[in-house]
Length: 153
Image (cartoon, rainbow, N blue to C red; front, side, top):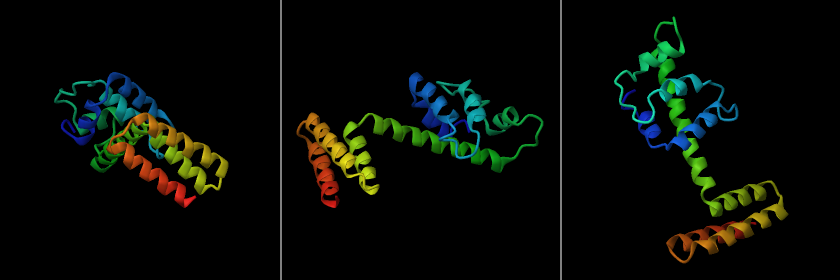
C-alpha cells in the first residue's frame, strides 16, 4: 500500500482538504455501508509525506481488526473504497469551486424533476456565471452546454 493509488491521491490533499476529507469519510451519507474511518485514521498518522515503509496493508489490517487473521480481500476492498471516496471528494471540490457547472447541474436536476421555475432560476445563474469567465474557450464551451440544456427544456 505504500505506493498505492490511494496514497498518491492522499498526498495531493492540502492540510485543509485532508481534514475536510476526514469529515467526508465519517459522513454516513458517503459511507456506502462500510466504515472506512478506521483505515483513514490509520493513514492519517503518516500524512502528509507517507514515507514510512510501515504503511503496508497488513499493518493497517492489524490496527483496524486487532486479533483477527489477516484477510487480504477485506483490506483490498477497504483500500479500494477509500480510494473511490477520495475521487468522489475531488469531484465535490471541483463542483464547489465552479459555480457555472454547479448551477448547470442543479438546473439539469430541477428540469428532470419538472421544477420549471427552479430550473429557469438556476440556468439563469449559470448563464451569469459564464459572463464572469471572460471570453476564452471555456466561455464558448459552457455557453454551448447551457444552450443545449435550454433546448431540452
